[in-house]
Amino acid sequence: MRAVWTAAAILFASTIPSFAADKDPLLDHMAGRWVLTGTIENQPTTHDVTAEWILQNTYLRFTEVAREKDAAGKPLYEAEVLLGYDAAKKRYVCFWYDITGVAGPGSGGTASRDGDRLPFVFKSASGDFHTTFAYQSGSDSWTVAMDADVKGKLVSFAQLTMKKAP
Image (cartoon, rainbow, N blue to C red; front, top):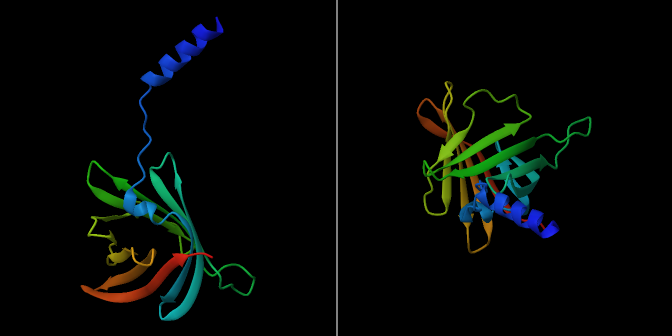
């Protein structure tokens, strides 16, 4: 009788559709532990980043925490970022949540892949914000450029590099 129940369970499970996504090959290069260094608003900074696949490989979540602390000993910056690939629309999506304020409706950004670059644009009534992740295959690292659109002109906000953590 146990064999019948086992066979029935296997047959039932095989009829349930799988919603698990394949890991996106470009985003998969971002999975792991990283040290992010560079400048934000012309100030040097170092952040620790951990990136991992979640929700059956649908999103790559990365947690970013600044090493710099405020007077109370709290990190000056923290963020949770979700990156994913929408195969139906052939575009990448990015949802960025950080301590600078609560994200509003439509706060996600989108990008079309350009080689090993993901140039995200976050639309805003006060001006678009551009965040470009670029994978450097030779060094297995990422550059991150962030630019604000100020009256139609891009103004650098941050220039960063992510390297594997030791």
